[in-house]
Length: 444
View (cartoon, rainbow, N blue to C red):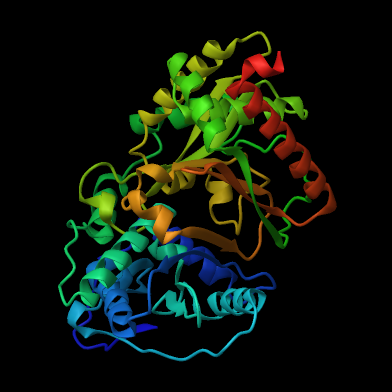
């Protein structure tokens, strides 16, 4: 576990919009019957006999390299501020956590440890370590509260630690590209949008969507068995939808129709929802990376904005027309990428902004092509795997990932009998839809 002394810390940085909202929600529910919490984690393997000193140096290097991991949060005069610990003050405390006989015991221990030690309101809001085997590779794990990371940060964590570990084993200093500070990103974003007002033209896209949707949040269109205002324990499930060859076939067909694989995926999700009883006009919230191609690409932080997307999946549309609709909807949405979701929410749906969750199950999906992430060329050796956990939910969220092995889905949804039935049917229909898209000749 990383720690630093308190000498020289200064509360001179404001947190980002995402961090402020997240911290407020966790703080407000801490002493309630249903306290909220979440973490993101990544595991990966290092080859050969473990060099403990090199691994400890690599983990310390990660914290020293990324300023957001050296931030301690405190609310001052209503604003969430950050105390930044100096890199030279970061130390690493190595603790033997025990011995385990089965992988099930290891999994249970890690899950419990993450929930116990990762706390938005305490520093450090993350934990790290390694599972050392008598024979076989060592598995390194790092888990972070959402306040300091996002899904796209996980590949950067793997790449940074692996490169640093190899360097320290060789007696060298790690050589990695510059990584901009997420605190600088948050400061720039606040400078641009802290004073935005409800009549600002930059909110036009959101307002037009709200008018058509009759509300800020697009509702998940299928029955999950939930009751308004209630939160439930979550189910966390993962599955492979297409193997590598099938995903490549779908990508080729999308390219032939003037689109990209993610457009075909979004169209398939919308069709599957329609086939299960949803509408033929798809509306959803979509998280989007704000990293761009500059120094943020190699950074850790919560570089995620969320925007609504809308397109038709009417039955009379052929495949090129479906993709054209998704492409147009995506292009229109991207014109407003710069407007922070938290600010739009606060200004345009203030009646829901202070709630502990979204007002009802929201239609939400995410897509990441892991093959394009830093270090992807080594993933076959490093075997990285991402994990996500939340304490309570009131609907469903799905994350889609493409890698060399295919197209995968990870869904978290309410642990209710109706939700289990609904999500099982939806996933089956989605897989059949994707297969039909990838090989239309085989399905007639």
